[in-house]
Length: 242
Image 1 (cartoon, rainbow, N blue to C red):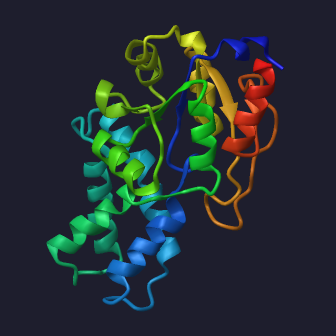
Image 2: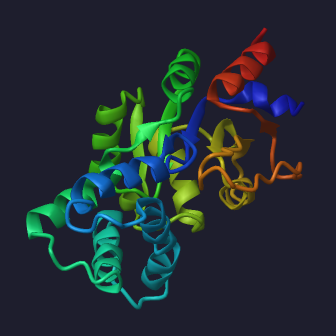
């Protein structure tokens, strides 16, 4: 195992998919708010399509097609487009606002709170998410996530995987970048983090995109440690400290 793992001072976490189950949570919220208007709506498909608009929307910001805006605003643009596509025109503005805040009410994976609490004993733990600060704070309150602090793309106006998002962790947390670990369920996130000098932990989430998710469990040279969940990560790092 990489000896540099003994030097970790702080850990930053991707949130959507890594720490929280966005798909089931959003599907649940869609069911609460839209189902009464559209009884035959497949809420899982709706959640998937909403999430699928996330990457392209951020790319529009990167390329200047859209000005900088927080994820809440991008989520609302995607939602409005989806409602038009599905021909759903019965929602009030208050219902649309409430539905857009579904992303503030995401359930943690069953291991997340316990695992983060264990890690917090020895490391500074933080988000490093494209979600905006208020979204991440509300999500932490909703799910009992025990972050020491919230780091967000909103703070540096650069979405992951832009270099600036990863490099900002050293500035904000006050540790050398090589003493900060990025934890994610997505290999692209970890590859970009490693290129910017961070240590990396991979936690596959086989249920992120539903029961038929294909998990990539291949070992990569940019991944320093693999764990089955956050509790397992805490256990493995504890052994290194002994």
